Length: 225
Image 1 (cartoon, rainbow, N blue to C red):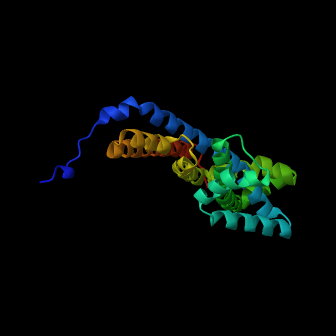
Image 2 (image 1 turned 90 degrees about the vertical axis):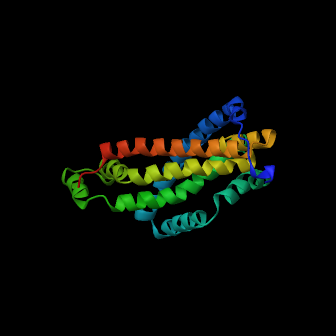
Image 3 (image 1 turned 45 degrees about the horizontal axis):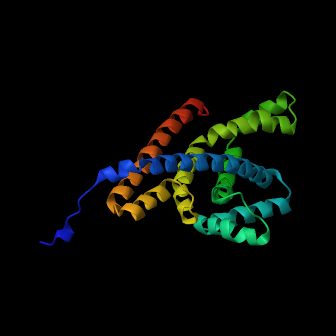
């Protein structure tokens, strides 16, 4: 039998370079958190515009969300990193470029999440706000927005996990996140199975831990109907 059928694992190589995976994981989480926060701000503004704005604004927001939802995130990252500088729009580095791309990509999905959340706010809550004399802005700030955030918590949790996994695409523009770290180990040590196995396990464990933590938050702040 040929020796090529056997693969000798060498996990020591991974531990010697584990810092690249560890710091890559931390960077990926940071990118996902920041992109989610920026995406939430843009997405919420888009949802409000689409639900209560004038018709031209609603059409513009609809076009924005539909366009971004049908563009691959990798293509968007390439455009932001390689294309925008030719238009005079440059970022500090490749990390900032990818955060921008991921944020606007996330905002298109979050706009729909918030739109559905706003539409799901019980009418009785709005009527109660009107009954005590709250203005339209006060009703949105003190009634609609807090209830909406509670309603959309499960969707925000799923979007955060999805964004974290999407950070693996940042390796295409040399952002030193987890996938890039695994690629570096693979290229420099030729330990293919070890590098990708450990990277995969880190993604799995991290996503599972995030899901468990966010489920606790969801149960704590769930809207009682």
